[in-house]
Length: 325
Image 1 (cartoon, rainbow, N blue to C red):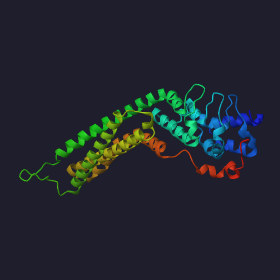
Image 2: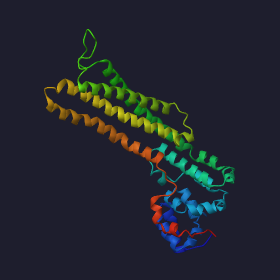
Image 3: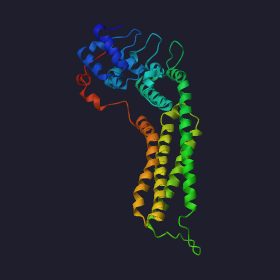
Image 4: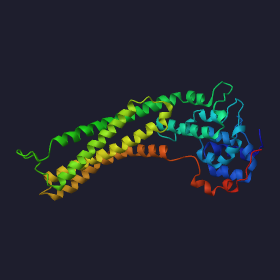
């Protein structure tokens, strides 16, 4: 069972489960032998950090895991690959919004531990005759279905918005504001700066909305395999949402330019209420979708493993003298 430190072990295990790396750092610094302690199910803190997706604790003790990765096998012949293949506890999944992002985080953990364990351990089978990959697929079947539904629902709602914008700006492009010269066909407001702003903003809105629509449609027609949720699908959704934001802003800018051109020539005071009302739809779409876009970017492009700034002040890393027995 390893060295027993009764008055510290429970606090240590609970800190690992909750990913409170400061407590783990303090206990391991004062009592290095605590690394050998095991809980009632026979798991040490390294295995618990993987099971509970405690990335801060994992980063803290990474140098220990590298030296002991081949020796951590539980009573069911599960190595670290099998353990990370299990579905994370519900309270851990709840930290991430959306089933697709939850599955992405699970895949990130599996890929991280996959790089850490020995190559032979990736094909080792436990007592249930399952490899780590088989465990992951079995445990995450329901989450995969939920992620597919979440991704489709999000893409469908956004594609409707993009299609509406394409329809509006295309109609505005072929219906020249102010009319055209009947003889030459040249727009009457051609020389006006605001007309140029309208033309550029309207074209930009059309192109970006079309791009967003195509990205959302590509999401709806994908096969939704496990690996697609790691980078491919989130990246498409990120660029789709970003271009949708740009097209919405450009559409509002084009509409404001025409209102100013037609109505504000003799009434400059109308510019203020036009700008105020223009901010309303922009603020709505930003409020509704911006948080989702931020979560997607952070989950896809912000690394959770490796050297982190918070580890520089940790006592265990500075001492770096902890060894497994």
